[in-house]
Image (cartoon, rainbow, N blue to C red; front, top):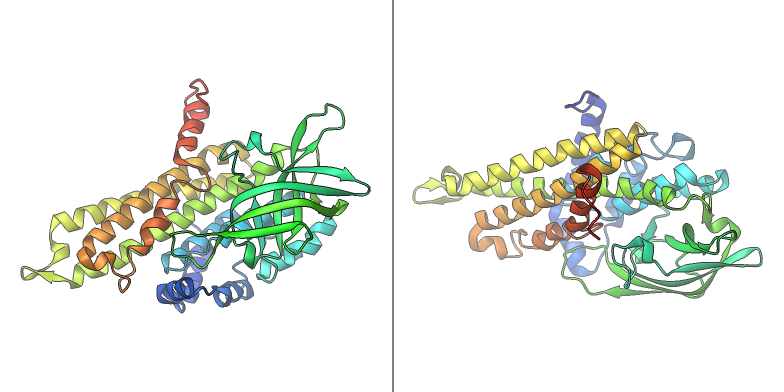
Length: 386
């Protein structure tokens, strides 16, 4: 890969994923969402084709690629109107953390299913009273014999109803200092003491959000992923890919909206000319396209840095990519709705449903304000403000 172009192999990957997803399309996605259905057929097909686990090591059933590859899959799905949120969670976050820090037994047990889509794994970090402050997490695991007891509460956890397990961020007591430190546990969703309640959301998506309650959930010793003393290092190994994937999710949404809007602007005639001939229509779409392409370039840079092992550089670039992509998607979708006029807020044309989806990118998985805090402090050297 050069600094500005993807490899032919990556471009082939994009074309194949787009072709597969195009066979489903936005109508399939929204029909499933509005009927309470799931996108399981699409999920399993991309898994069978090898795209879902393309970032998982080959010896565990994956494609042996990097975050840049799985991000490309995520973007192309969204660009065809099928943004799969669990792509961000299962292969990118959980798959990455287990690949990098899991024991051999854990890799053998979890990664093949994550790769082929038959064992989707959710990820739980956010808590009601902590928000974006991961230092205030109160979900706690305590030793009990040769295992653990896990208690706490999580909120806005995606796809719990589609997952057999959840990778939960908890805290354990350091035997030497008595202080609490972050650790990761794989928790079965059917475990005693585990309860999940759906959160009613305005977003048009088959993937639901949940509040999780953990009441002394008993876990074996092998449920702890990685080194109990590694702390935040392991956690952030999953959060950089999360930001890169979120950026790709957003740029894919932006591309889909612009494709629909451009097509409409070429065909819709008012005052004896296609509306796309008018700069009031054309310029906002052109500006949004520029912003999306810039965000895609920064996302590519972040993925390349991460895949090269530069976690520090990837952290900065991934945050910038996520910020830029969310802003670009919001501008693209807003311009697409306006291009459609009254049709933009009908279910028939499907533009208005993108508004909440695009807007969510400014909030999750990390807010734009926290990214600005990060860049202010780490990129510009300004005093910490929070």
